[in-house]
Amino acid sequence: MSDKTVRTIGMNTSYDCQQSCVFCSESDANALLRGHFLPLKDAVRILLTKRELGADRLMLGGGGEPTLHPDFVKILQAAKRLGLKTWVVSNGQRFAEPSFAAQTLPLLDELVLSLHGDTAKLHESQTRRRGSFLKIVEAFRHAAELPSVNRTALAVVSRLNWERVEQIVRFGLERCRAQQVCLSNLAPEGRAQQAYKDLAVPLAAWRERLPALKSLARSLGGSLATQFVPLCCSGGALDFDLPPFHCIYMIKIDGKPAVADETVLHDDRKRVKAPLCGDCRKNGACAGVYERYLEIFGASELALMR
Ligand code: SF4
Image (cartoon, rainbow, N blue to C red):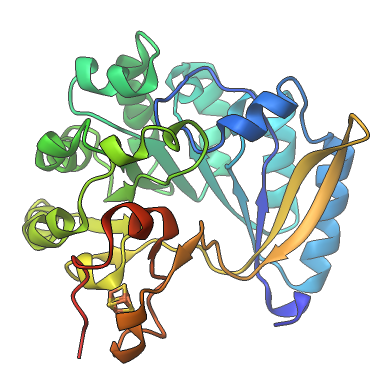
């Protein structure tokens, strides 16, 4: 695939966050780069270059919380001037501020906000930030006032919130008025790596519950997506895998922050195929299973699709 056919720009602009989520997959990179932001001049230069190459969408997310970038609004404005669609993945805390929401939401096409529980107790047990639940609900309220913004509620699913996953889907679609709920399978990375064995939801449980959750979402007028769930366990829910993208992020070289630019064809998150996948008719379309999951739990829960 050439650079000219990659249409999404993914920018990790910030390495700070107001929350300290128990499952944060970015905690290692954020610890290394905390306090650094992708410089505005680099962000604009890269947007221009990639736009000329044919990119038509900017995704701000990954790394830390993008809304903490001091030039968040300017980056969005530059993207819109260049005719890019904009997609922001956020913990939503700043969108609860009326003035911030009024300034930024008209610049967005898609907004993905984290919702890890349907009660303050559950959500905040994940984010470890008191008051974060009221703010995420308020952020959704502000976003729902703009019909032009497509809204997704993103729940990272672990054993900590699995028992209430139905209530989370309902809360996201009914109370928060998201159009879609995405259930993201906990990744064995960053802070979640150590406790992964205790936190991972068995794939058999995903396979059992997802068809009913998908029907529930449809009955409420919305849709259900999954992320990082193998196809044989996803119950036919929409897959939220990223398309190939230009990945712009910061690294440290000789102790100094620098800007990196690479093309990611597939956001594989260390997913692999089990030996039995070779006989599966979905082998080509499926991204497989976390390697760590297979190491700990084996492949017996996969259901070969013939
Ligand atoms: S390729 Fe493997 S993991 Fe994917 S659907 Fe088929 S059996 Fe499941």
